[in-house]
Image (cartoon, rainbow, N blue to C red; front, side):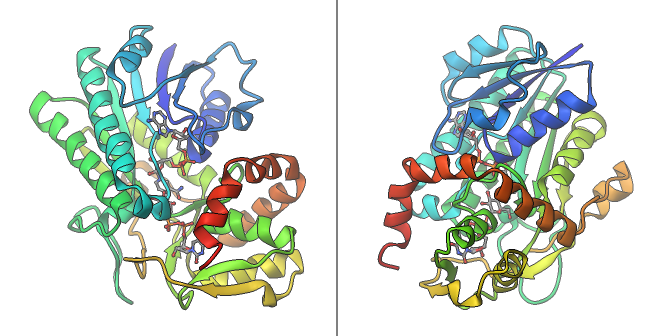
Length: 336
Ligand code: NAD
Ligand code: DAU
């Protein structure tokens, strides 16, 4: 039986990945290591909590002693989801992003080296490539040109992961995925914010002209891709992951409103995000060609399922929205 240390497993993608692995791989044991920041929520993993193959440790990836204590339990591979993940928050507090995303990754890499783990997988993002114009796609060879403190910290982490492979021979992989959506997505991000605000008949803030483009992928498809790269990806290799679902933000919000039968008068154009990347789009030919991955959800089926999940899990998002997030929302959008 293999033991995986999943860092950041109480967040959106990490919790979906833990559910996926427990279901698909009866031979794997999961240790979820998470600091439980505002974005970490053990409610996301209620169904895993009773599983004898699952355990949780509250800890900070930037704290070497805490990471060491977790590793000494015996870990075969590390999958690092832990990060500060919201671009708007990084504009307010870049230092926190450098600490968690860069320093935290380096602490994990040292532990991976010390304990000679079989594989270290870094969950990165397409945002490290910067922004595209109207044409073209990000390939794994696209030069890094991050524009926000968030994406710069993720790019820094990727370079450290690469260096530990080149210098120490660590078996590593890096995945760079486009925008995810799906269940348990924290409602500070566009799609869950739009769905939950619409369900409450509240305005939906759209930055600038709303014509920025993102390439959306259902989180379950991302998890299947990570599973493949973890088990079958080549060491030292980067894999782009994307859904081939380019949509403007305005179109996303209008689709959500139509799905919920709510009026477009709920759309409110607000001041743009500084350094706002205009367009992301992914060339996923490598993971498709080498590992046979392709998405199972279309954007339409994925969004319908997601809207249904938020309708049926009001308690989950109302709890999240009533906590410290309420103060964040007022600060971010109060005078915008
Ligand atoms: P999230 O914000 O929902 O979850 C992050 C998790 O990390 C939380 O559980 C939080 O408690 C934990 N965490 C934060 N700081 C920590 C620390 N110092 N030590 C231990 N745990 C800590 O993020 P997400 O959307 O699930 O993203 C997960 C990863 O995937 C991130 O690395 C992100 O950069 C990457 N990613 C996200 C997307 C997306 O669309 N959401 C797309 C591509 C890549
Ligand atoms: O591309 C992958 C990245 O996708 C991940 O690395 C990040 O962790 C994740 O947060 C996401 O980043 P984005 O900045 O693209 O996601 P966000 O949901 O914050 O915004 C999506 C788009 O919608 C972006 O163009 C900004 C816009 N937006 C966002 C919010 C929260 C709005 O117009 N209004 C909003 O209120």
